[in-house]
Image (tube, rainbow, N blue to C red):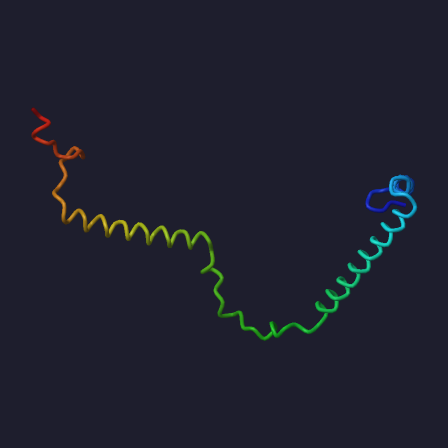
Length: 117
């Protein structure tokens, strides 16, 4: 017999070592605590089973045909945001270019006549 990958011989050895370490009164107290834990788990499990077997909370009457999940696609959200940021950036640069002097052909700023000296 195997329980949680522990054979019956290994379980007996674990129990004997536990009794030796805790002593008879400590072992009895540990068993009471274990029993309380199991009872709590059983009560929780029973409540969960009862709540899950009840009638659904009206979710069967919800119309999901109008819901378009494609609008929540992360790739599309990122694309849309990047596109908006690029358009906003281009509008700002177009406005600043319209008010600034034209650049020289080599892409560098116009040389200051004082520096040429």
